[in-house]
Structures are given as structure tokens and as C-alpha cells.
Length: 403
Ligand SMILES: *Cc1c(COP(=O)(O)O)cnc(C)c1O
Image (cartoon, rainbow, N blue to C red; front, side, top):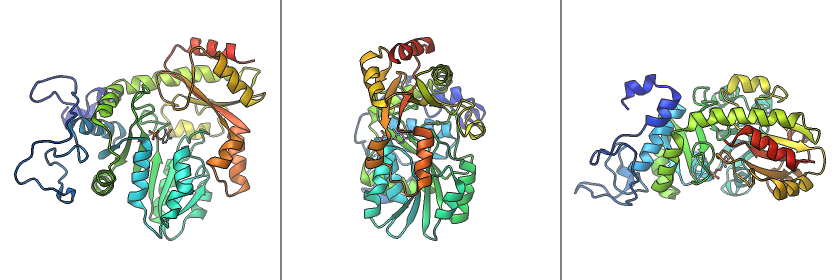
């Protein structure tokens, strides 16, 4: 698709056409998978990535590959980003971002509740490199401002955050980051570009786990960083290519295929989630439901401002014992799988126990942080990723598995 057509195109057209082109030799309309790890080179091709140009011919798949490139172009178009770098997983993207932007002596502010592996990485491994980390409830902009230091290089947020579905105001955080001379990175995996475009709101970098909504079918791990060429061209050379956690062309192809229906899927996820959340909210065995699309969400106003789509993840607490209910779900659910992960066409549910997570993952530094966790999660929550099955079937499945 030519740039001038792309500029006018709607989201569903972009999802189908952006980044793709018919194969020049076979004229195949659908993207093919180029699995080759190496490419026949010219005699003047360089051997070090140091001299690599943005538009140079393919040389080695860790440096770049036609199938991965098509995926990166499509993701950049969907996010409204100048460029994208794909990784083998969301954590591959996140660890590359941290290792690229931070060095010994730097300071970063990281959301006190965020994806478990990122939280654990910044509890231990990253501080061991001489990088100091402050865990802050980023839904409180004053707390973020108070945590800024002269050596703060990065503010890292997740909105809605995993697993609480607590939101952070990206526009406000972008202002704080700019004033501090720091970069703002947003993990937008839960929101997706169908809901929120963090770069338009002032963020410098966007992170997605492609394993979730963007791939959408639970059959391919992947991750991506999106932003300006100024930030990402050196990151690709110095960190993605040299650390080597790049995406496989086969996964790139699966995710490309999943992306064709991405905007349609998000509308269906949202409609299903709203139906299931409303059902749960009136069920006597349920203590509390958290979903950004419900007026009862403590930040519903911000959700309406910042999310064009409320996405498909719900959390809820049961009135009785959470662990017992988890066993009931494992035994009784017929359609919904009791499993981790989210954003798939299949509905998934998993129980997250507060006491366990506070010992393994989330290290709160103030009573306010713990109180905010408890406001959203109490002693434990079920995280339900509402899939694309018929809403009535999901509701019936939950109904027969609740007391
Ligand atoms: C799943 C997830 C990740 C990590 O992605 P992987 O592809 O599993 O490495 C990061 N952030 C969020 C919000 C996630 O849900």
C-alpha cells in the first residue's frame, strides 16, 4: 500500500494491508514465510552490523528478514509509530529496552504493579547492574513526581496494568517525564492500539507482547518496541541484534495473519467483556468486578478519556474463598480454559493470590501502595480474558461453575 493511501486508510484496512506487498517474484498475494537465515550478498557487503544501513539488502535474519519486516511495518502503521523492532517475546522487547536505555548510575521509575516478569526483573537483575529502580504507583502522578531524581532516565508504566486493571494517565506522565529529562515507555499490551495510542499522548516508546491481542490466537510468542527511528535504529543495532532475542519468521507470519482481523476482534472482545462483566457484577457470589468499561471502575472517567476500546480483560473477587473457587473452575468450566495468558480468541481464567504475589513479585514500599493493591484485588482476583466465543455461552459456563 502506497504511503498516501495508508495515510487516509482506516484501522481495519491498515490491519489487512499495511506492510504487506505481493511477492515480487511469484506475485503471491498473501505474505510468504522467508525462513532463510542468510541471504546471497554482494561483494561489497559489510560483515559488522556497525555499518548497517536502514534500507540495506537482507544479509542475515538476526539483522533483518522480509517476513519480520512486513510485521514490523504493519505494527508501526497500527500504532502510528515511525518504526518498530520485533522480538522473540514481550519480555525480550522489555529487557532489550531496559538494557539499551539504562546504564550503571542511572535511575528508573517503574510501576509498582506491572507484568510479573518485568516486576521481578527490576527487583533483582537490573539493580545488580548498578541501575537504581523506584517502584511507584504510577496512577498517582504526584507520587511519580516525588520519585524523580536528577539521574532519572526512564519512566516505565503499564496501563491498564497487569493484573489490577488500574490505569495511568499517559498525558500527565509524559509531561512529568519531559520535565525530568526522562523517556516515557508504555506497555500497552492490555489496551492495544485499538484503545490507546500512547505515542500520540506524548510517550516516547510503546511495548507490546504480541503473544496477547495482536497475535490473538495463543499460538505464537512475540514482542515489539515502537517509537522514533532516532531511538530505535541504534537499539536495533546495539541491543536487538547483539543480544539476539529476535522473532522467528514463522512466528512473524502467524502474528501477521492474526493482525488482519485485529480491529474486528477488539470490538468483539469488548462487547463480550462488557456482557460478562455486567453478568458477574449482579451475581450474588461475586464481591467485586473490575473492568475499565464499567461505571464502577474507580478510574472510569480516565478510561473513557484514554481508551477508545475497553479491551477484553476483567478481574473479579468472589465472596467466598478464592482458592476453593479456583478448584471449582478447574473442575467445572467447560468452555473457558483455566490457564495463564490473555488476549486469545479462547477465553482464559486464572486465580492470582495476593499473599503469594506479595512474596514473589510485588515489593511495595509504602502502606499506600499496598492499600491501592487491596482496593483493586483484596486477597486475590480471578483474571478473566474474555475470548471471542458467544457471550451467552461464556455466561452460562461461569454461572454453572459459581456457587
Ligand atoms: C504477557 C505480557 C508481557 C510479556 O510478554 P511475553 O510475550 O509473555 O514475554 C508483558 N507485558 C504484559 C502487560 C503482558 O501481559
